[in-house]
Image (cartoon, rainbow, N blue to C red; front, side):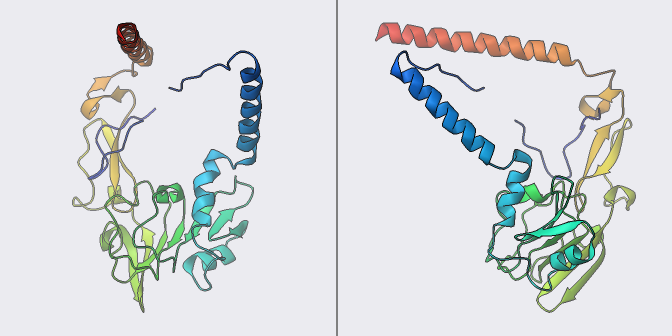
Length: 255
């Protein structure tokens, strides 16, 4: 499996125990069972985790797709798709989100869960008081081919990251995302000898180690020592847990 050897262009990806308590004896146990049953029923009624973010984004603004938006046009001409609120989804594929229409939503900044739309092919952000898009907002949006933004907002990655950039009234349309790894020296990063450049969004790239290399600058050869890594991590975690438990016990005994 390929392993990142360097941070994505100008960006760093964030990295990621649950305690369980048993019910008290007597009536507490019954109450706990009832609460657990209620929680289970609630979880069954909730949408799956994969569709949760998309569902929230689809209902971010009231109403259906805006008439004449690039998302409505795409959904109308693409077979096997359907409208879901402000989204265009593919039917029979887990209702994968293909288009997101956030036009005229009074957005001054992008929603915190905007990255849930990373699989989108077309996006519309027009008619919003947006002045800029934070760096890395489109990290991972490798499928994006049409992006409509307010005229004051430049295309993410710059005009060089797109095949065509046009303006129409108060909006700008960025079309045909280019592969920066196939571009000029200015866009393509210098990856280590044993790594390859892969696109990671408009004007964004990352370097992935070629098998069997891994580690810093892909200088280590062979498979990543997963068992050793897990055993060391488990040992350290257990030692820290025992230390904290002992400290808490001494503190409780002293009081």
